[in-house]
Image 1 (cartoon, rainbow, N blue to C red):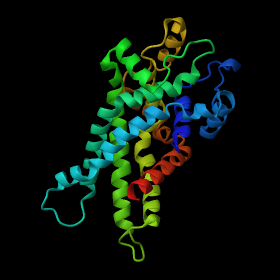
Image 2 (cartoon, one colour; image 1 turned 180 degrees about the vertical axis):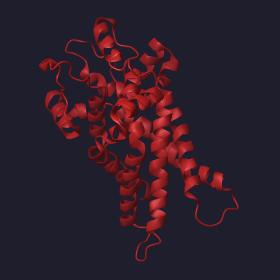
Image 3 (tube, rainbow, N blue to C red; image 1 turned 90 degrees about the horizontal axis):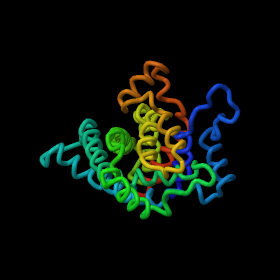
Image 4 (cartoon, rainbow, N blue to C red; image 1 turned 90 degrees about the vertical axis):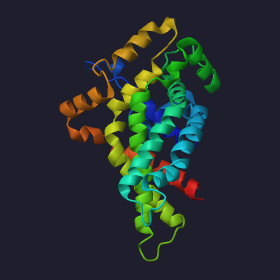
Length: 289
């Protein structure tokens, strides 16, 4: 609920087409995370920033519940019931990768619906909105495109969420364990706050290569553009053609690395940390309390 406006702004930025040939009409509408928040609020009203909050909550109840709730049991399974002492970092990472992958496999339909609702504001004036709400979106997609369509983009979604889940949960676990060994620190709110910030930092550092705009745009094009009313066929073509250079997540990763260099994967580090840092602090403080 607190961070969904930043998520909505992020989706709009990632789906935005680049300007071509200096055409003023094609100049980017959205600039920067906070600038995008301001533009959406000014043009569409404050409520538009919470577009997709219902499937967002569906997503967190499913994905968040599974990835966090299963983390300790899976970690204990990997180390064995007779293990004594601190759990090795490798086992923490493996457990978080497992729960992240399992969680998003179940929750993928909620991700798809959230992105489609968040992207609705980008449709031109006069083009009818596809969905009246989250439940209508689930049923409409299943009816028009088939139940299988609810799992569109599952491959890159598993890759991204498993890695970022490992970065968040394993780093939080490790940072908290390290802090508690420092004299004067106890298992309290201060420790949880510092551990949450640490988790957010490592999530950005480790997750940026799979969170960079090009890879994200590829995933969001897949989940957003599967079906749009025939009256806006041109919109469909322009959106889908926007990423025709990328055949898959791996292809996108390799071409981005080759063309733009490794630092391309860390563009937007500060706003990304602002989003993930605040997200992790809120999530882990809530969890611990």
